[in-house]
Length: 207
Ligand code: TMP
Image 1 (cartoon, rainbow, N blue to C red):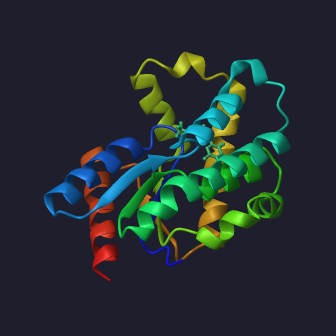
Image 2 (image 1 turned 135 degrees about the vertical axis):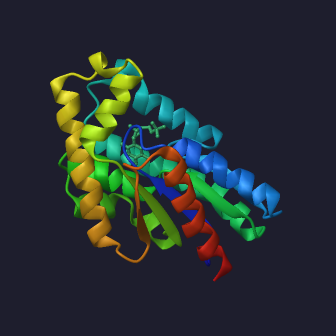
C-alpha cells in the first residue's frame, strides 16, 4: 500500500504537537482536503484499551519489554482498523505519534535498543509514514514551558533525565530516517512553529 498520505507527528513534552495538528486540520478544511486525525497509543477501541493498560498506575511494575510489545500491538490494531482504511479512501491521515516514539522512548530512553524495537515492530515496518514532522524542542526549553504551566514540581530528577534521553533518542531517529523525518525547530514561538509545519506539509502533499 502507498503510504504517502500517512503523516505522523513526533516530539517530547511541550512540543506543541497538538496545536500544530489542530492548525493543519483548519487549513485542510479551508482547502477541502479530505483527512482524519488520530493518535497513538489509541485511536480505536482495542488500542485505547491497550493504552489504558500501559498508562495504568497499577502497572508501574511493567517491564520495558512488555511495554514495547504493547505499544507495537496497539499500533497494528490501529493501523488495520483506522489508518489503512482511511488511506484506502484517499484521505490524509494525521497521526500524533507512531513508530518513532517507540524508538525514542523504548529503544533509546528505556535502553531496549533500536534494533530490538524495530524487531518488535516488524509488522509495522511495512507501513512507515510518507512524512514525519519531528518538532524538536531542547529539553531546557521544554522544562521552562512546563514551569510556566506550574507543572515543574511534578518532574523529579529521574523524570528530567528520562526527558533528556528521549531528546537524544529522537536525534538518533533522525539519523536513521533522514529522508522521512523532517526536523522543525520547536524552540521558536508557537506561531512560527505552526507556520513552518504548515509549509512542509502543504509542499509535501503538492508533490
Ligand atoms: P501522549 O502524551 O502524546 O498522548 O503520549 C502518551 C505517552 O506514550 C507519551 O509519554 C509517549 C509514550 N509513548 C511511548 O513511550 N512509546 C510509543 O510508541 C508511543 C506511541 C507513545
